[in-house]
Length: 317
Image (cartoon, rainbow, N blue to C red):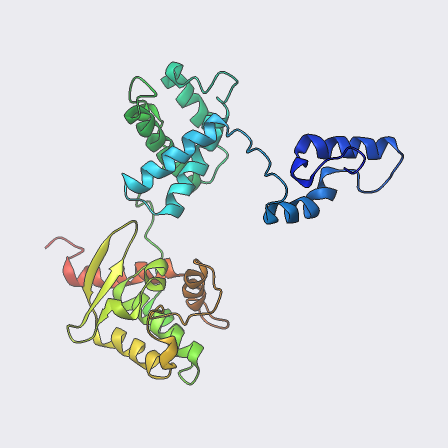
């Protein structure tokens, strides 16, 4: 830079590439790749001394997927993680059409939609294949709403073969649930936490994510009600059984006051925890070491199968 009388502000990608070419020509064997300059350039750019590199043009498929994610969140009310999952499922469909002149969606036909499903889904597990078909229908609906395709092609997505109610739903037996509750040591904070989680899963049939999202403000002790935030933006108030509320009371009675307000009701807070960490702890509490195997879904199914006979007869009268 001194030889060429260049300032730091002139450190453009073209200048750095010319520097590396000259370094190779002079016979150097180290620090010859662009990665070698990343620490120095990053430091100078953070200081504002060196210019930022020009942003690479976004592929047409990625730009369209960004709009699709915003549509799912704002118009359809899906959670951000769910919208990202849908976008990931249909990314191969759009990436296969990304060409220099665009995606060519105006010429998209039902035969191409069917061909993609038949080429992609056979090697997937049944659940993944069904989710791919659902996401593709949603994506095609978005394209039709935006006027990018002339007709609604979602109806041409083949259904994934699946037989509902082919077997009884898996559920934890009452003895297994009792063993899980007995395995929670009430003399430790972790044991009281796990007992409160398992009681909510068993008595109310909540999902792991719903238990993880509970805060103290969601529990109305005087009215005996609890506010549950379900999938998407659903929010419902449920009666809080005495035994389920008792588990939370035992947990909170031994917690420091500074760690109570604003924290998840069933899962103690940990500094720096990731947003999904609480849900993992809820799922882990269902199968502690040495206890009966299970999962939050099996506990939820067990709650439903125990409540069903009390509400509706299973045999004709």
